[in-house]
Image 1 (cartoon, rainbow, N blue to C red):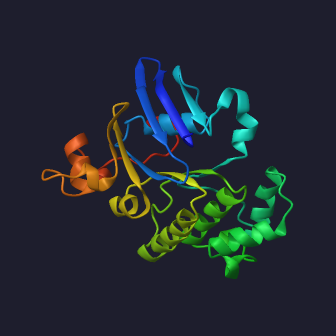
Image 2 (image 1 turned 135 degrees about the horizontal axis):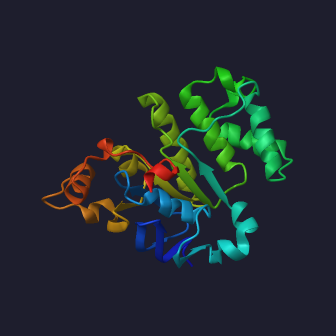
Length: 252
């Protein structure tokens, strides 16, 4: 059974068809990059996978379950980290994690210790959020997303705006998570190297349709020698020129 199974999904907003009969399947433990220019439909597609939007047509299964019948159960099984997450700046890192743990009825200091260690925030556990660097805040957002031991993790441009060292730190965390094989990742990113380094499979979407998907080495040819060239040839744009997926209505 796939971890995520999207079947002929259609979604429209007024006279704009944002997603046009998309089907895709993601296996458990697979790390997948979803790439596309602004307006490609990827935001809407991911929101439907997250249960935030309802398809007009088609079906989406997470672990064989539909959002309509199993929303509470599925909410407890996924993790979401947005491009920019705002936390209460006067709370400490540990207090922030305890607050979010309470939303999942997690009363387990050991679990909080685990995600702090996994995201490399041990030295900052007593620091107020307002004193953290951008990279540290992104690691905190990832720690929050991992609290409930999600089997499916959605990351929206987790390293946008970070310096190269902070980006590499986050990559190392995700690669450690990947090595355990227990988490399925859907990643949106501006950085080709990030998709190439972290993901088993690339999905390129534009105008509500999947243009190409597969392992990177299977997608490249003489005309498209790297992921950047492949993206340009398929969409007519550079990925860095396209707005990122931001989970807001402007990028349907």
